Image (cartoon, rainbow, N blue to C red; front, side, top):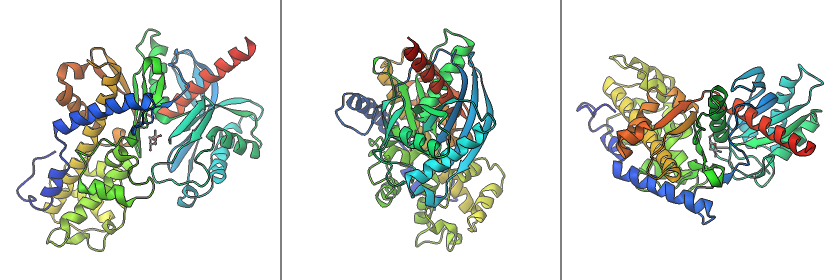
Length: 449
Ligand code: BGC
């Protein structure tokens, strides 16, 4: 963050100071995170769900043609993926689908019809072929088998009727039958974080069978979450966005946002509400409106989109960070899109506040990652790999450096250097193909053996 310039000192200084997380608070968060992992695994409550995944680390030799479908936000994706058995994968056919706001609040059957229609479009080219399908379901689900996943409360602003408590694999299979696609069999359901983790291992072991598997899969996009390979406890979906040990770091903007939202409900997804792409623009909006309230600053926000919740998105925060022009023309362009006018001093204040909010997000994510790594390896003595994907991580300039700096700050340079971060772009679909191929190979081995 740029040090606060005297010119906008006073405009946003209170908000800027509030978004600064101290190293001691982050250390406390990391410790609490590790403790809550133990509690979750032992079934002793806590905010980390530690859900089972019924997956194993891939060998890198998984092969075959698989259909994948990815649903976890406004945009979804279906594809046919060919795995060549050497760590490589090719997307043969792809289709993107989008949900309307009405569908986000509609029935489960309507959502699954949209998903099944997209699958129909990608398999149409081969009308006779039978396919296993890997379903990336990027919401919380309690798996009872690799192909049985009971939906828990949704996140990221979704509220689909009659979904909670239902098996999402069965709902997808029913929608596929309604479309005459019974030749596509749901072989595996996986969280996006699990798909990212396993794809990194597939690629590494495809190149070198002895390669170290990935330890953690992290998504930081609209939502955030981690999966981790916990050895004897298997690969778990932590649902880390729900982590609630954030009291020492939360600002009054976080508290108000949490209190006022109904989906997800107050108290749920606390870490996600402070760190993921869906919420960072909203925190900026709230802090700016508050900084201008009743004073002389930010008069140009009056009558603008800043009055509308969720009008500011994280892509705009990335554009603000990428603006290096002397007059802050890029910040001006973003503000104008939101129908706000500004002085240069106000633009500098917007830039610094936005940077402070994203920097805090990176530090929270970094501390939570250390919480997981220390659970696996308390002394951080061995090399570890974190596989990462997601639009905020990939789109915000310098995000990874902010997380790396947090590692150095909290555990020292030597230990931090043993942590490898692998950004695996567009990982979820291909990762799901690896999971489904492994699952269908295993079920064939069981039925023939
Ligand atoms: C969901 C997770 C998901 C994450 C990233 C969260 O809101 O609860 O299941 O992995 O978003 O997509």
